[in-house]
Amino acid sequence: MLTKVIHGSSAFSELASEWDTLAQNGMTDTPFQTRAYQQAWWTHLHPPQATLHTVTVWQSNEPVAIACFYLLDGTLYFNGCVEETDYLDLIASADKAQAAWTAVFDRLCSPDFPTWHALDLCNIPEASPSRPILRQIAEQYGFHWHEEINEVCPVITLPQTFDEYLDTLDKKQRHEIRRKLRRAHGAGVSIRQIGPEDNLEQAVNDFLTLLQLSTFEKRDWLNDGRRAVFHETARAALENGTLQLLFAEIEGEHAAALFNFDYKNRIWVYNSGLNPTIYGNLSIGVVLTAKAIEMAIENGRSEFDFLRGNEEYKYRFGATDTRIYRVQITRAV
Image (cartoon, rainbow, N blue to C red; front, side, top):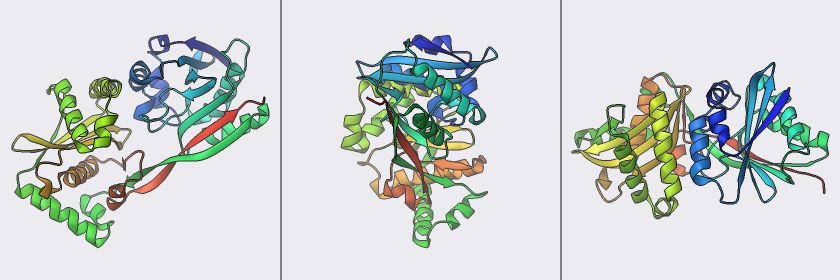
């Protein structure tokens, strides 16, 4: 296998025709491997002193892997690491992973690659082949290897019907969801999904307003860079048919929202918003999440992924933990 290195953000344009095809066939194929997301994150959220270095792996003149890193203070990170991006990995198919990682490391350790002393690779899914491969390669090079659980991503495995789903919950939670759905229906709560006919920019702004109203932490978290990533990612996802931006409305007023991806037969709950000062007695956030789960089941989706975080409400909806890992590799001094 041959490798090429692209230094800087031109990687996103130079690899425009190959990137998403490789990602869609990759061992970790999530909304966060798409070129649109990766480019948006780098453009708006990369650390100021970081430099971008993308290693591509080729076999028989065909690209088989993309490893997109940024270098900061001598450490290489996956582009997108860490806070905003829930799943990261080498972009390569599972059957090419071993050879691709080997080729990537050969290039990283070559004299023409910028000097680095460590890799700090966050948010690798539990089932990824990268985890054992990275350990093996580190040992071959005599590098120090360390792995730890980064966070959990609670996921619901969806049954065939919403009633079957409710039956998987404990009696109290099942009763609460049904009661809240009935109350919301009686109060005239409606669920609206943003589509191509809608003003997407305004819809994302409305969502971000609700996000900031949700908690003081979210209000402070939403800086200009993250706002831009939401807008750019939403545009690309809507164009590709993978955006699920949902609003719970009462008399035309937005009360809650979910910014989801509908991708690869799974719903990925990226973020949420809620106005806690209105209709508090209706538990609109719970209602919207329950309706999103119901929609996912009706549309034949297999999983509902709450993404990172062990917030209690996720488990009340029946989610169980999957893990994402942080792998650190340090060169011998």
